[in-house]
Image (cartoon, rainbow, N blue to C red; front, side, top):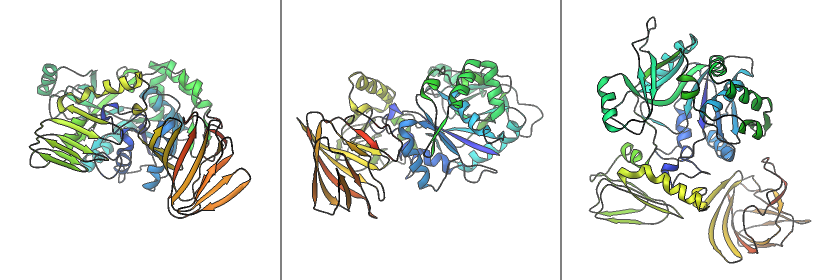
Length: 476
């Protein structure tokens, strides 16, 4: 039995402003119509004895992850929520404990949620080759056959071919950090080095035994966090204090560099970690001038550039080797060779406590989404979309009143003791402090315009009295 473990906890800061902390790159459709998470899950179809995937993700992303799996008609074996990031070693440990909770000891195929693999058949074949090795107690990692002296990846140095196995496999001699260009060129010419993909295959028990041997502190902390695991709707929630006490470390450092049973399988399958705008430029088809264009883009004399228009026209003249990405609330302009430094902009935004590091103007919620339209002193205007059959929590506000105008669909409104139905062009008023709820009883999305008026208009001015999504009762 082979259980995929999809790690979906990354923030993707180098793909800002499209990727943001509350809506990271693995949940975005960057290379096809499917999101990267969906592509990761979809490429598992066809592997022998594959089970439904287990996903480890950030608590804040849980409803988006669940919805994207639902769109694929995939019911995961579990969605484990990390209350805080502790790197890959603890994430895989709790997944291994969850896998063993059924009484089995399955093989775990550990995959990042945000990688591109263009040759799916080659990927599946190498995974199946790795199954026999993992069943023998090896900890398998997949080393990408390098195509260039890449300085943005870590490397794996392989030893002589493993004797007594039917497939090409090598003991891991060492993991090495991202090299400079001269060192990367030496790695490439030697033929002994592979890009570190961050993908692994091993028995759940084998991984836990190795973790206990080499990092008993992580092992015991994960056991303590798992012991207090609680079910919340369709999710498995780790105790925040227990998991926060766990040391942060990667699988590479915690286990793979220390074990004597690590082996690397070469993988040539069109892999790319899509870690920057230049990587996206490389994997997409280009026009006759070498440009990648998305959205409403006009060019004159532009070469070898990546141009992404999300909401407005981009008109570019006489530029070369640039990245221009436009969203509703931010525009990025960068040289294509310096896009790794975008994370520095994100860091500045965080230091200034600006919301552009965290949220888009359109913010997804389990019931739908809202989008800011205008804001000023003592007022704010939003467009709210509620999915069919969904509804917001029963709530009230201490500092604001609200006006709702229905522009599409039918709204069921609870306001104090009253319940009413509103259709297009109808409106209602929610006084400050009044208990209220908005629901969509119809078959099409409900859209309303909400005008907020008050002394404080922050999202934390919400007191939740009832919530079907298991969110905190009080947010103010």
